[in-house]
Image (cartoon, rainbow, N blue to C red; front, top):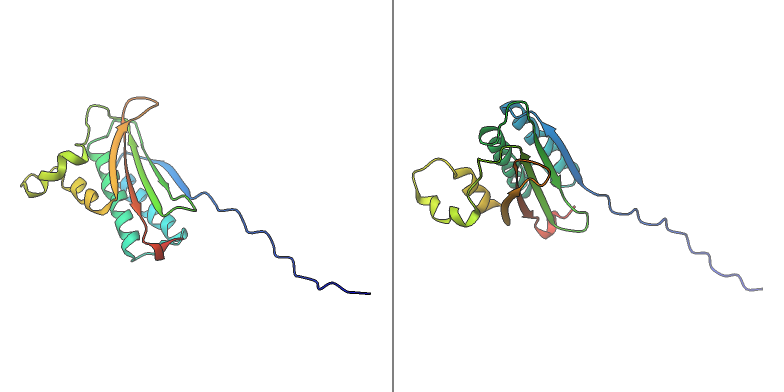
Length: 161
């Protein structure tokens, strides 16, 4: 009688989790601060630790977009929406901030190229975003008035969570 060796049964690998955080915030400075803090906590939970270049850059992008939503996209009685998405098998983190003000639109990234040398303070934050993000832009809000400003940040290979 031959006895076959028994191989331990390995549990099936857990399917990758969808890493999406989204929430509406009041269109106030307090709402923008809360959005930035919750995004920072979520990045840490996703394995993008505090104090790393990736964490700091993404948190800064969130801070700039949410501050702009409050300053330039505020409509009384309307909130802004933050969506942070990091596909589990990808190295891209996408930040989206949607407000409901349609007539105040940011300049396109290509229009900001020569603005870095100007003395004009308006638009400096988006110049910073253009240096931190791999790419960014905006599009009209599909379900009503307003716009969504988005940016993508590519994580370094070693920061992959």
